[in-house]
Structures are given as C-alpha cells and as structure tokens.
Picture (cartoon, rainbow, N blue to C red):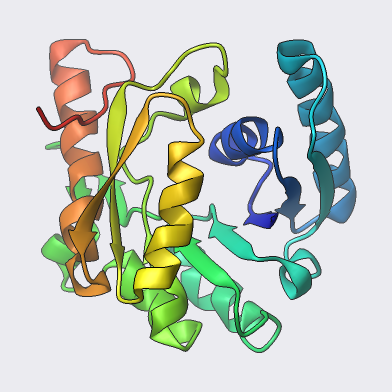
Length: 223
C-alpha cells in the first residue's frame, strides 16, 4: 500500500512512517520537497536501526505531488491550514484514495486548551476536510488522542485506543487494518463522520488533565 502523509516532517508524520514502513511504501510530505526528502532519509535510517530491514520504503516529496498516487492520504496539518491545503489537494487525489484526518481544532487560553468548534461555533476538522475533498465517503477521522512521543517509539506498544469515524464501511475497514498494524493500538469504531467531534474533543481534555496532574503522554483506553 502507498501511504502519503501531508505534513509528514512533524512528530506524528515520523511516527506513522516508522510504524508502517515495515509493510508499506510511505511518502512523507512538506511544503519544501527537499525538507521532506531529508526527513525521509532520517526516518529510513531510524527504521533500519529499529527493525534491521524493512519490506516497505520511506521517501519524501512536496505535499501536493505525493497526493496524486497514494492509496491512503494522512493529513497531519493544523486545523487552520485545512481550507488552503485541502483546496490545493482537491482534484489531485485518486477517486479511490482514502483521506484520514487526525486533525484537532483546539487552541490554548488562560483556562487551558479548548475545542474550537464548541467555543467558536466552527466546524469539526473531519467535517471541514470532507467538505473540501469530496466525496465525503472517502474521509475517515482517527488518531486524535495518540501521543506522538509514544508513536515514534517503535520499541514500545501504545496500550491505547483510537476512535474511528467514517461513513463508508470499506474505508473504515481499510483504516482499521492499518491501525491494527501499530503495536498496542486498538481501533474503536465510533460511528459516522458526523460524530467526529466526539473524538476530536478528547484531545484538549487529555492535555488539560496531563498538565494539571503532571501526567506524561496520556492516552485513552476503554476497559
């Protein structure tokens, strides 16, 4: 499978690349193609140190070139970049490409981290992505509460759940397979994309709890 990561030079992008390169061809993206290629080289070296050999690969390209021929596209970008980035991606993605939004609309205030759609009346991230990258059925949301520190540490299982929202059973099933390949991460189907806000809003809650209680890299697990 070919997996593209828009904004793949950040911590989450690195974690996804390291976790999935054992079986898949990963293309990490950046607005600067050279930066993406350098990051891909570093990720490849780290993967080989961790695993010995990998059956897949990690390469780099600019955010929009990589999107043209991938099976799954991960949008590892800030909420405020959705309109611009997805507007440029529209029309370039294959019809059968699954788009994954781990994006969380949040900001920090004096009280703590808040969920922007609740406080400011804006749309959840998954809904905004679906509006820009039709058809809606291709869009799935997941990975909102995953610690990038733990994701990058391939020697450790995550021991956490991630909530998946999506309208198309086939798209949800394909993403569920990828989630199951990440050690210690359990996929939990939450419902259609209309419920993505329920998954997204957990992240500011976790960050507030972590700060107030001196917890490091917390996650969510249903028991």
